[in-house]
Image (cartoon, rainbow, N blue to C red):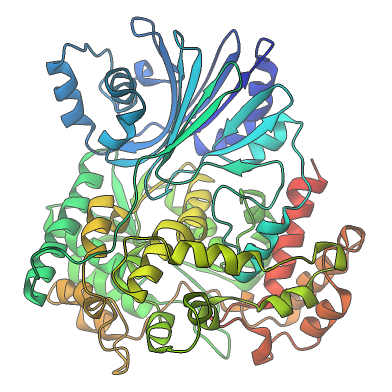
Length: 599
């Protein structure tokens, strides 16, 4: 895991000073080494977090003079040992023991098809000295970020938006399409958009080739189909198949590391099952980490009662952190400084504070993100399934959109009012071919689009803020492809009986995870003070929205702000999935002040 950046110019030589400005904004992603390289129209930069092949030979940018290729890479390729042997059989020679060089050889062998051979999480750029072209690719599930901006006479890319801003010349006006997405989909802005007009991001499962003459080609190398298999499978067969695929996903993420691996243990089913599977794989000194916050009258601030049971069963080396509210409030601006994009999810701050502690113990952790989307664990899925009135979008929006389009128009100032961009986008995503049922459509969209720019992005940003690599076995693309074929009833299960979704996953966990963890109601990474806003937290948010910068920006309608501030805990001021609308506004405004106004 690392931070990458680069520039390609079309008419002049690249300016190494641009890379020098960008690299400091990537330092946290890669604290172990720094490198930069330039030649003619291209300049590349890299900050390294050493996980695989810890030697200096694996530093980047990595140049293969024999093949005429240079790469910067962020991520981990879990099948790189097998690929290396295959490529050796083709006559390729290797000068390192890591996965970066394998990508170089794979590109030389298969060209733009090379991402199809890679199993893992990745964002990389390869400069082809002979073709004078820059090839970029992003992994299937979008686990690794890749932002870019068009410049006058050139193109720049980076692992975070902050580095692009540091490079200069970025249009920082607000993208109206992205603004509508953000306030409808709880901060999700699907690629290629971002909240800023001047920054875009490469779509997951996509590659892009940029030529010196300015020509651009893109290619989608992976799509997800949600169709039943040719041979129907029983519940027992599905349980066994998912268990086997999950074991393999956990094993790959364990073996491909030359440093110890831990687990972020929330107390929920997903992370608890990871602990069980790692123990099943023979890990003896497993390290686990949990975090909790102060209770509010409406909600507990920790899930320690459940995580403690998993720790007791497996005897892990456990680290438990309790964060008081005054510390949360003090660290909020700091966490927002490391958000590449605005993130409304309250657990972003939780992951930030947890990652700070975990990074002092290990460099790599496994995390349970993705299980709810892949296996149907959220309460809104059955509500959507039961809806019979309206279009696909209307059935979805009723239980998911944070605000109706009418409310959005009330929220923003007149200059930001426009059409219902989000309904149009969601309609296009839902109705793409290759899904057998409505819930198949919903889950596929969630897994391939919404999750990328919500929990996956939050975890990457917050862990990498402390040079901590998070691996997500539930988003192994082989497991995702298998689960997408499963009938929805094996995912949703008996919601009406209070058991929640993830039916097959619970079958896998039974006997491995304490029953109390399996049978508990669905929980969320809690930070109640950002949900039930009162006291100092209310003052904090009110001050942000009443600041001179906020008033000068004129993004929000003052009457709408006043209504939220007056009764922040009124039921109508929570979203359908129980997010705090006031926090959404305050977070975006503080993000703009932090990243745009201070630029």
